[in-house]
Image 1 (cartoon, rainbow, N blue to C red):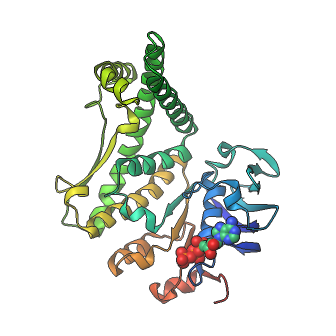
Image 2 (cartoon, rainbow, N blue to C red; image 1 turned 60 degrees about the vertical axis):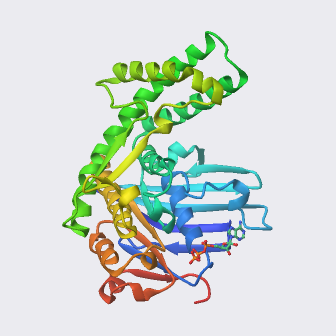
Image 3 (cartoon, rainbow, N blue to C red; image 1 turned 180 degrees about the vertical axis):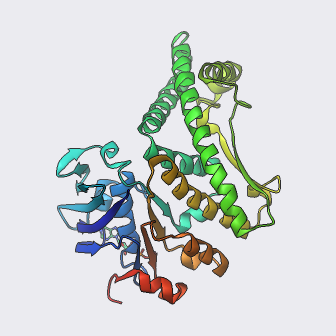
Length: 360
Ligand SMILES: Nc1ncnc2c1ncn2[C@@H]1O[C@H](COP(=O)(O)OP(=O)(O)OP(=O)(O)O)[C@@H](O)[C@H]1O
């Protein structure tokens, strides 16, 4: 069983007036020189599958300069269903649609999830921990609506608690927020660690196919020590940690422990890949992570996601390019952007649909 994206159309969207592209059920290659709008099209695909984009655009950014309103539409087909996902936008306003009816991002997510791999992800290992938490969370929210709700609730609670810490100590009130932070935080932690465990299995296996003599690993490192067993025990642990940091938190006006401070730690041969990994090893980690996301989607939802590879071929060496191409089996619908078809083997180009964007 599978669902595939068949047609993307955009109107007054970013660099485009009016454009329609038909997507191959296997591989579609979007080729064109720099700045012709290839990433814009990938972003449209991500918005209408993940319900969010890596650029986190405002409505006005999506709207073609000078236009009054615009829209993007994506047709999905499969499992006996035909679904039209959409996003309408005008100056300062945007709304998702599903089969012509208004919906929230939650109405878009989960039907055909997507995994995006773009150059910006390549330094995920060496950047701050927030980038690695975001990689885990943005994947988790696509697979599980409960994950999305918990994450949103947790982030809201941290923000409100921070306001309270900044405004000064309000005896009694802070304790109420502590309880709620610990309860949502414990649930979020359970979701995160369970998801990471599933990714880990595939991640290790894929990494070893790229670098057979290295021992990769990834683990979740909570900001308040090793996790106890079970939701209530974790919430109690979290409360304890908050009590210990109370004075510090009041002085600094923000919440200093919890899932928003945790780390996703990659290691190779037992040493931190962030501190000791070469650039090549760090790139292999990201590549293995992305492929693991594709496999976990299949494990959980029973179908592959849409794989979006935006301009990564030029950033990877031949061995890592081969690893990706070797992995893209026919059942994984893939959209790849490039400025240069020379990165692809002839047999791959023969089975792909190649679409020229701009005046190539
Ligand atoms: N709202 C908008 N209105 C008009 N043009 C826009 C808007 N948003 C983005 N653009 C234009 O889109 C172009 C960038 O498109 P995009 O990033 O998709 O290029 P690309 O083909 O992926 O290029 P590269 O190969 O360099 O990554 C820029 O010229 C930018 O000015």
